Image (cartoon, rainbow, N blue to C red; front, side):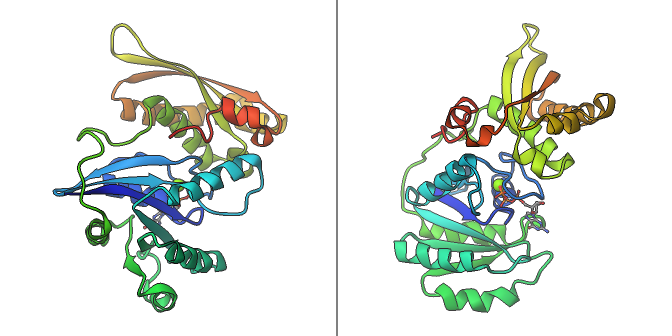
Length: 294
Ligand SMILES: Nc1nc2c(ncn2[C@@H]2O[C@H](COP(=O)(O)OP(=O)(O)OP(=O)(O)O)[C@@H](O)[C@H]2O)c(=O)[nH]1
Ligand SMILES: [Mg+2]
């Protein structure tokens, strides 16, 4: 059987996490229309008939503007050197950027097998980009047009990945879907709802701290208590909204998804706190758990 690790890399908002979720058939990574949704790598396991593939979803590539951004970028770059295959995701709708071009060349010269998934082909025909991509690296990279949203060509993509993986034993148990804990997923669900509701300046400055995550003795209800940490007091006011209406709305959406994910009722308590410029504080990043998971 084939087994190994695949780094899923590409520009922010390219559709990496959506593709990983579709491949493993579960929502292991949050998704939003805003760039910089994924902040740390998440490994998701696909079990095929004759393969086991560990997909390492990474934060999207872009210019680092804060210490948090640099940590995220480093995570994505480090991942590439630790895997069997690089899956480079390009948004067909957005076209090729200079960064994409130089990354394709860089991956090719690093010698790691490279597969380019040209995604979002449901909203943009891939043909426009294929010829340019072929010029860049046809002999050294496989190019597979896909649509995660329409589940198009995903099986073909998996076949191409399998063909590049070494023979090996299973690396994870059959029932493992992700390397991340339920507690992590709970905090990500909260962050996703904030990403979806507020303009990007706010979610980009938000961290979620879970203070309590416990199943009651009756086994039916989880008590979850968390802090939404933001960077400015005016952000706090926006997050809370008039008479708490905004916070009530995002909390309610988050609770529904948490209950779906945990398969139990959730009693959710949410506080909003301010910690100025936490994204540039090494101590805060450590305290909030960024860049620590391996
Ligand atoms: N039309 C279309 N939209 C897609 C597809 N895949 C992803 N999207 C959308 O693209 C946006 C970004 O998707 P994500 O999966 O969060 O992208 P990402 O590359 O993980 O982004 P970062 O984590 O910020 O780097 C979301 O609004 C998705 O719904 C697709 O195949 N077709
Ligand atoms: Mg992502």
